[in-house]
Length: 366
Ligand code: NAD
Ligand code: GLY
Image (cartoon, rainbow, N blue to C red):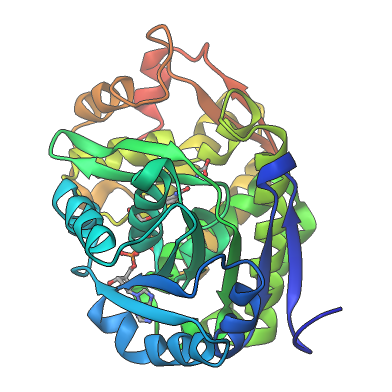
């Protein structure tokens, strides 16, 4: 039976690592009830940052308290810099000082940064303690909180140290998106559009028609969108948890995108912008190869534009040879071949590693 009237539940089936993703509006107030069912200890640690914690920590701590669970607050700095060795080991010390044990739990309250750091910490402290994710950005709710990729950055590169470690439960409260800066909502929209391109032309159409409702924070529409994306991501993760094959399709737009972020030095081009530009590069290349029709390409560009994401690389003035070079430096390059996810129609893609470098470079012309 459902705990709350409005909640939806998606199960990620992974044998002994199966878990629920609970999606709803204002469910964070009752997170304690969900967490109490799985907590093996009466003290948990909640990792968040000042900005998110100020609004949502009292709600979640209060709900835990009502279940007899004490929450230790642990704040990390805002932004990507929190995914660091320094913050990881700072947290380890706090866990030791508070006598955390194998049966203890870390709860991540925040976006992808906090989820990745907290999940990684949970995976290595005492060789693995319980982890719960409460994602508060659109990107985290539709992507990073699902599927168990965790990690931190090194000075040499992003996400270079990490693990696959599944949470015990994910609690995605759409109402938390009401305080999210619009640029972060835009960022998450690139991933939402990606799911439509990958799996479902009807979902793509729903997103096309409801963009204004999303930006007006219509929670019913947002919940439907989050639920659909979560269903798609869990299906992929269930079939290929450790990314030995199928999971790579989730990188649509990301290989081109990582090159744009790297050459742009992570300054003007956010991750969402890079993914949106990357999907267009993939679409344009597929169109040139006569695999993807012009009308579908126009629809892709149109929805990206409506989501306030960029439709041209020109303003960033990036060198195409450097972009191609960066693509060869990507983690996903195998035997010096760039593996690209290319659309064949809206809702369907193929993986190709036989595209000539000159054509890939040319795909950056728009
Ligand atoms: P983020 O975690 O930095 O959050 C974006 C900003 O929004 C931050 O300033 C944060 O403090 C703020 N914020 C978060 N929730 C808020 C709320 N409800 N109200 C107000 N402000 C809020 O960024 P992100 O886009 O969520 O995540 C990016 C990270 O996710 C990157 O480190 C990336 O590598 C990682 N990632 C991981 C996976 C995975 O599978 N593990 C997938 C994609 C991305
Ligand atoms: N964000 C891509 C993945 O989880 O595999």
